[in-house]
Length: 145
Length: 405
Ligand SMILES: Cc1ncc(COP(=O)(O)O)c(C=O)c1O
Image (tube, rainbow over all chains, first blue to last red; front, top):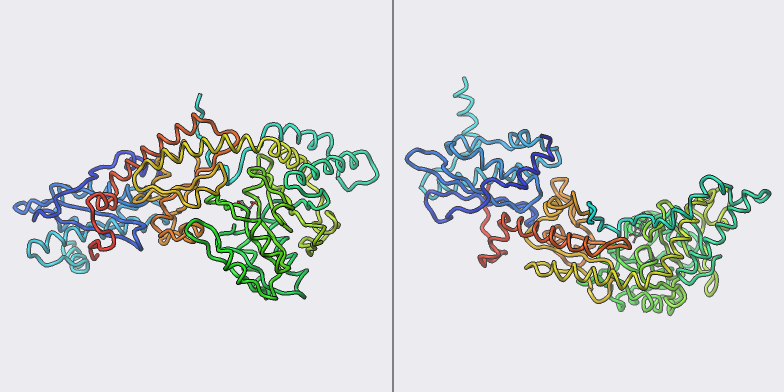
């Protein structure tokens, strides 16, 4: 499928659009916007603390079709991942998966940020230290060696 | 039977009326002469056709045929009017007054003139899209040579009180120029009644062909002069050189003749359809018309749908309905429509707006289809809009707690 078809597919059938209980200790919420509401993405994750697994993910987007598709696709990826793995989702993965043109890259940055914010919201609620991008990246490299 | 896609972007351009095309056709093949060939029948026939068209174009706006200069369109006519007057009247002054919500053909020409030493006042408009006439009068100085204010705005369809504006200009001995592109052929424009000294318009906005337009230049009280912007064979009484586009001019003439005859009835019919569309879409919560509703072109409606984004909205139906939006999310900082932001709309609302432009060939069936498609898309997108959810839950939108990435 080309970019238009992939975006259209998510636009017509958004996966996991909706809301999780923002007050629940198991739920992390990331709400990110750019300049005065032109684009707003909310990603929510529900975590099973015993297994350290994301069991559910939801999104809502105010933005163009690509921003909707980026958030929709990402919620599919989140389910079943550990929060640590989910934190590694890179916006360029989304760009690649949806074959987005360069002019739409900014939509995916928002989604990546919302995922990270959701994870750290969960960690904050549960008294855990926030994950840092740099730290994770170097861990990743160490693992790979 | 409904034929898709439905065209509701008649402010961008209109289809040629088949009667116009029919009138034009012989001028490509049989009557193909150069209208300035004075010594043979081909030239005479072309000249006669241009003469008739010039009368038809002039009649639409109550002008004399000698006051019509054919150009390639409204953009060229706007350029000729502004640059031509600026150069011709430089001894009198260098100040031109316009508004913030003119078409780019006016605004960018003004920007160009500023580099040549012109002083331009860009009047603000109120939330309904109208300039303050007291502010206009106060802006006039001894250096002012022209007021350039559009007859009707291309994005919101709001009609300016041109008669009152020109009266102010006249009182101060200042020329009145108006871009009448969106008004001509849609509502009655009369250069004498309206006090217009120069007027620019295009054939393709009134069911004529693209690439042809005109500048009206008053010849009597006052006699207005412009310097030519294209040098050459001295066509159009020296004001616009270049071999005349005879088929285009013939089509333009026919289009003006048809519009003059059918404008009143067409305007009434379109106002009914426009109101039906508008009232149905206003049933959606948090939707609003942009611009002064009581003083608008009968076929235009610009509506904002709060809490959804314009490009996503278009995506829901732009395979089947052609409209234009106040948004283009193609870069990291998408630019909303400058017309809508001048009305005081926030960037969010400017982005969530759609212009519907009905036209001669719009049917009620098409309007019913558009109502259904737009309503469904708005509802669907609000379903997945976080802002809509917060609004419905009564959140204070100005104090949302954003995550810090
Ligand atoms: C008000 C106004 N002026 C000028 C123009 C330019 O017309 P054209 O592209 O035919 O030169 C347009 C068309 O977009 C218009 O709406």
